[in-house]
Amino acid sequence: MISSTSPPATTAHPPPSPGTYQNPLNLLRSQQIINRRDLFKTLSICLAAPSLSVSIANARGLFQMPPLRLSNRYYLVRAGESDYESLGIINTNPVAKTSVDSGLSEKGKKQTVKAALQLKAMGACDRNCWLWPSITQRSYQAAEIIAAINGISRSYIVPEYSFLDARGLGAYEGKKLDSISQVYALDSISMKTKPPPIRDGTPNESVSDVFVRVTQLMSILETQYSEDTIVIVSPDSDNLSVLQAGIQGLDLRRHSELYYGPGEVRLLDANSIPVYKQPASAVYKCTNPPNCD
Image 1 (spheres, rainbow, N blue to C red):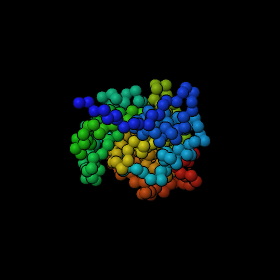
Image 2 (image 1 turned 135 degrees about the vertical axis):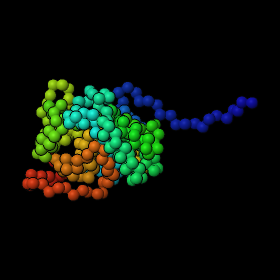
Image 3 (image 1 turned 60 degrees about the vertical axis):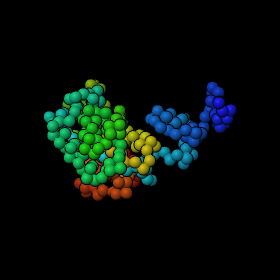
Image 4 (image 1 turned 135 degrees about the horizontal axis):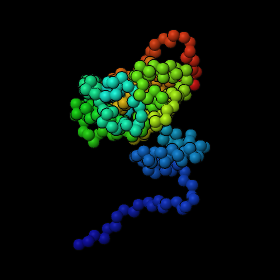
């Protein structure tokens, strides 16, 4: 016998008519942002209506550097040495980032196993964790090694397609690895100074450019997760040193003093401010870190 009981009535929300302005606050309250597309759509609306940005920040807490608090626990990992790095060559062109030639060297695999064991000893994934590696070949390989050693399902590996790309070093592409000291010398003068450009498609990114990328990454992570553990796996040091400096409110021009070696692991503690090495001169003057020109 078919029941005549009707399903409970629900409140309908008819779509707005064409040309009708939607308050971003209503968008945030009426639906959860569960993917990057929705997040960027909402942010673009905020940018189009600056007068509402303060209200939205209060309603949802848009991410800012340095943050008042972090909703999640973060571990920062640099992937082990790559094949290019084993040859002493700088390779940052994103065109080749998924190539097998950009994978871990034999030494890099051992460094990554050591990093995975260190994460296990630190209890990073005792209650499960999310792995966010760059789609760069060596970073994704590192994430798979970390997952295997820590008993993490591959479904918890979330590849990041652009925000964690290795910093583009422009005309330094293909040069010896020790040339990066020249880049860091430029960084110490201004966070907006870019390496010289090159015509092979390799980006030439300033510290400020990297800072924008890692801030966007943290905006996604802090929106998408809450009270979770996230392991960020980067192909290079600069993503991580700039991210750490930004989170801890440090002068971004000095990010290289937080340098990450291949396979290095750190717990990102927003309340623990590292002691910088003393500068050789009084070149560092910043009244509003990490935003220092």
